[in-house]
Structures are given as C-alpha cells and as structure tokens.
Image (cartoon, rainbow, N blue to C red; front, side):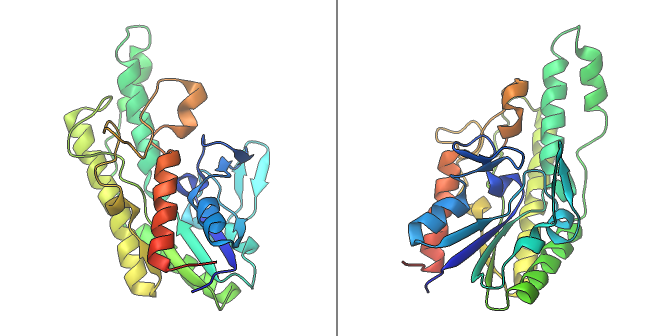
Length: 257
C-alpha cells in the first residue's frame, strides 16, 4: 500500500515533548515524533495536528488552550485527501500521566521537611479507578469522524508505550506502582476494544515496548527527574521509543514509497 498524505492526531505520546527538534513549542510537538519519522520513511506528506495535553474531546470538537495559544479541535484540520490517520489519545481522559506526575512529585516533596506539607497535599487521593469506556467512546467517535472528513483514509490507533514494568521503580511505592500499572492496562485495553468496534487498525505500542519501561537497560520512555525544566518530558516517549513505533508502523502497514 502506498500512502501519500499521513495525518497525526493525539496527545503528548504522539506529539513528543522534549524530543528535538521542536517544531511547535506550544503544542509540545517534535519533528522526530513517530508520525514524522514514519512519513519521512515512506516519502509521504504529513499533517501533524498533535498537541500535548489533548483529550479525546479536544481531538473531536473542543478547542484546547495551552498558555496563550488556542488550538482548534484537531479533527477540524483533517484534510479530505488524507489516506492514513494515526491516533494516540485517551490517557489524559483517565488522568494517567497526571496521576503519575502528581504522585512522583508528592513522594519527592515528602522526603524533605520543608516541602513535606506540599507533598502530603499532592499525595491525597488514590490512583483513579477510571472507566475505560470513556476512552473507548472517544476513540470510536474519532474514527467515525475521520471517515466522515476523509472517506478514503485508513485509521490506525496507536496505544501507549509501556511506562512501568513489573518491578517497582522510584519514585513510586509498591502500592502506587501496582495501581499505576493497572491504570495503564485500562488505557491500552480501551484501544483494543475501540479498534475491534470500529475496524480501525491497531499498533500495540504497549506490547511492542514490553521490557523497555522506566528503569530498564534500554528505556523507550523517560523517567522522573525532579526538575521543572524537564517536567514536560517525564514519563513520556524518548527518541528511541518514537523510532520503535515508526518502524512498527512501516512493518505492519506494509507502506512503501
């Protein structure tokens, strides 16, 4: 199959914050995210609409405000001539990354007496036992809407890279680690259900990346560094993770120039 116009929709796991080169600072969008690498590999045109922090709602029909920049709903930018659309979004609907960062900072602050009170406040509230049907519904609506805007497009859902392996890694406790892994499985499971329900393609980055989580010898995601300067890239794909997804897209789609 030859693809000539690829469109990328999604949140930070598609946008690639912190990976150089930065092509849109407000969107946290990298020129070396998986969509860019894939399009370059097959010689296709790319329309990258990804925005860090996006939810299924801001892909579908709600504007997204980031600082002083307002991004229109991503679907409004999907052109009629798109023949392949990739989608990675839904984790923010369930508070996946937000919860990981909240607990990571809470545990960091609790280590020192002068920040312990702030840490205790951040630690309040458990890991959410969120309903994955929220993501299934959002992804299903996105696939249907893409087909309305670009009737000839193939839609491929790309789920989230594995963040945490079985062994507990800092800065999380055993209890937090288990709960966060369970939340990650709910996110990935929603992609599988949505793909089956809609007939969309599915690239299981979660399976592909097993053994490459935080703290492994060859991580495809960034760990936690207690620095506000690097906060946007913590627990997000690194360059190796983006390259692995791009290579898998080329392999599974059989795309060629």
